[in-house]
Length: 64
Image (cartoon, rainbow, N blue to C red; front, side, top):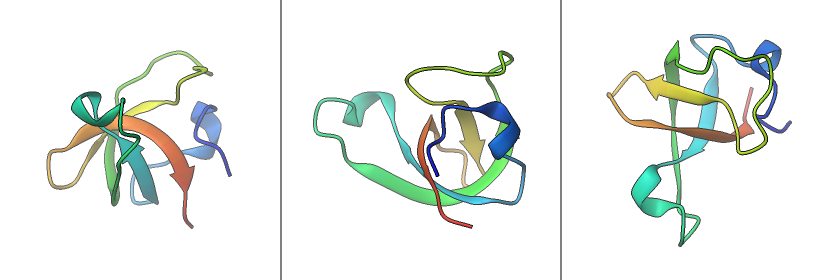
């Protein structure tokens, strides 16, 4: 499931995000959503979230 729609992402979900510094390489970081930072309903690069470990990135994949 792609992470471009806010309605698909809820705190507690496990996701894979790309951090700002990893955008060129496309390296994904897996974690659990703590907060949703994007206010709009949709974002073409992915909804920006904060993970429980403090990592901030755009959701590329929703795992559960």
